[in-house]
Image (cartoon, rainbow over all chains, first blue to last red; front, side, top):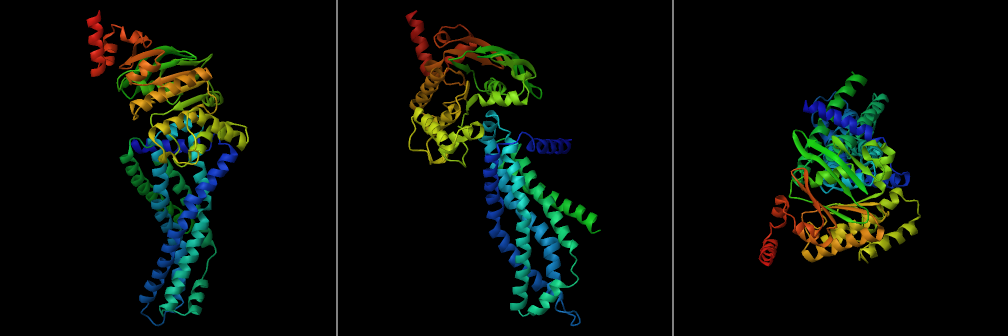
Length: 245
Length: 254
């Protein structure tokens, strides 16, 4: 029963987010701020993780190739497929559920606890549109972060493979181009947009509707990470089944 | 003027407000007093439209908030200023941005006009040279004054204050009380203050209502409150040692 109530409250929140819009000049400023907080400030961690995970994928693939008949270009192929199909869109999104999701929940939760959300409502402002709508718009730029993760993951694989002595640059490049299916890029970006929406709205719902004090803000952040991750994994399964299954 | 007619509000099975009726007059500081848990905060949130009562009406000038459409409610809220218990300043904005916020959201002035108005209200609440500071960088008393400045920057018709003195030392609390009363007279607005601070009652209690367990049990002013025989009110007023001693002196004098 509680889950049904929560689902209802989530969709009711979405309806309110898109009603009674905030003044355009204020909204524009808020969107820039959210792009900075949610996207630009995540570049560092995404770059670090993508580069090294790309490297690890290349090394793992190389170390598991015992049969001399298997071409070395498979290292490039495996790295590309892993990065494009799963690592960049899905696992970066799980990491972002921890970073961006917790940030959104704790900032909205703190605003709830300190009555800042009530202050917005008393002023006649649609607080959901003011607080959540700019986050949804900012996360429309999330695919750029994923492109960045894809590029760095593949670059990390190339550096680890070539400088580790596992594969030549030419073989790695051949592998990257081997059996390339352009629809996989479309599939990855469809997933990315869905995950971006989950990343913007689920933590916002957790933070906006939280009750209690500082301790509950911490609990809400944890719940936010758990639910955002669960929904991303479920959405990933459903989209993969629908588009590739 | 705000007229409240027989409002009821519950949360689950718990009935918090049980048929409260009163009138808050324009140009006066109207106090709502009562012990913790008496329904004061729920009452003020009903007045603000943050909670919807199950029964009863809250009438602003001519129109009940229950009969207003979304646009009318939004317009009404732009005529309200609210001083929250903790100030509720936006901690990502500096003082100037906090005070300018209602002007940016609803005003039609340009930036320099807005800035002039911000400086005017900050000066009115005796705050200068704090424009670029963040709320966390100023004292609790100063935060309350910034919150008052933000509440009056749009020249509201109604000012609501939820425990304006909570967490302040007695001297600063008196400064805040006097400031609220001066602003009420100066702007000729309807001010509703939710408090359990007897010093505030003595300083600015022009009309006072006393809530007990969600019911209005007494109404009067700051002189009448010390003369009433209402047991609930006397229990509340004379609960502190200082007021107990004053009471003993009064009885001896009689």
